[in-house]
Amino acid sequence: MTRPDVAILMGTYEGPEFFGRQLESIIAQTVTGWKLWISDDSSSTVMRDALRDYAGALSGRVQCDAGPKGGFVANFLHLACRADIDARYFAFADQDDIWDADKLERALAWLETVPESVPALYCGRVRLVDRDGRELGLSPLFARPPAFRNALVQSIAGGNTMVFNAAARRLLMKAGADVDVAVHDWWIYLVVSGCGGVVRYDACPSLSYRQHEGNVIGGNFTWGAMASRVLRALGGGQQKWHDGNLRALARLSDSLTPDSRACLSAFEEGRGRWLVPRVMGFLRAGVYRQTWRGSLSLFALALLGRL
Image (cartoon, rainbow, N blue to C red):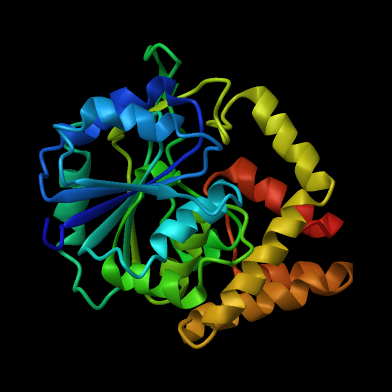
């Protein structure tokens, strides 16, 4: 193919059990101008062998290469920053989901309203299904506006929902594939919202997110998962994530908007102070999470010095 409209970036790792169904849902997209790049972190050729069954349908539209073997975040950012991959738009994809036929079409319908020079990110909710495809419910609905003040303390959507334009991709490349960030989806939300871009959160799901024991990161919506997150945050895990994100943002300091720099400065200053100045810095930064429970937990972590 010549330069495709959409470069689909799929990071894979072992376990091809659900791989075929995902490929079928990509092949069935109403947007036909796509090419699929796969970065396979498997220790064997099992994923590449699974592609052979779809050789005819994917003829000339897929390229599969060995991944960097540095974990799933490094795998996706390696793909996003590859200079030899060129397209108007870029879409992250997991190996075990099921895309609705109009997933790309809906994303592009909004992205094409944004000037090419403006970084733009489309993301949204997901439909949760079990390993057999039975629906379990929807991911939480977030109603507050996407913004850098939210992105500093929360990731609002999974990478599997994300489609972004070339301007956003250039920012990822500028920061580099080797940034030490918590997760790739949170990172691109930070980058686009902080560097003068626009973010669209779609409340209507466009994919089925399969929950099974092989997930690297699951839906994180069960009581057990939420309890695990609380314990991790109290143990300093959230603090370490912020440390990595803030170091990575320093690489883009000249691309951040003045408002983002002011927010970031207040947030960073507050993190390093004792109780009262810490809380004041947190309030001055104006950071927020999407729900009142999340905002309450955020304030509690600020009081405890765990942000």
